[in-house]
Length: 82
View 1 (cartoon, rainbow, N blue to C red):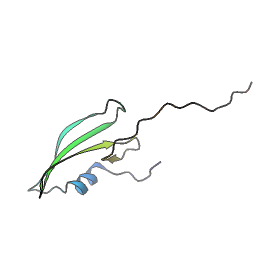
View 2 (tube, one colour):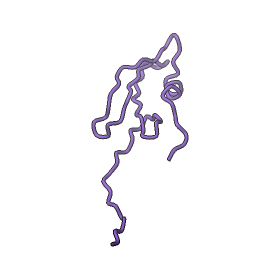
View 3 (cartoon, rainbow, N blue to C red):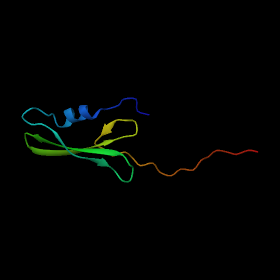
View 4 (cartoon, helix red, strand yellow):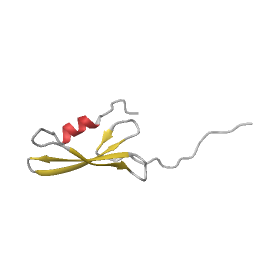
């Protein structure tokens, strides 16, 4: 498990570097239907033009630009002895 939890605020500062003249704003908040995970879409401006980034929340509480991998079905290997 990842013990280093990345906050959404630190990722926004890293990727969009908002300032008073070029702020970042939330354009959409929602859930991914397949994984029921949360996502936030942010829009900002850079020197080259507008930039939109979607951040996904992972099970450990961290945020990333990559969506979490959905859990796949698994079989239990436990032996039952009478």
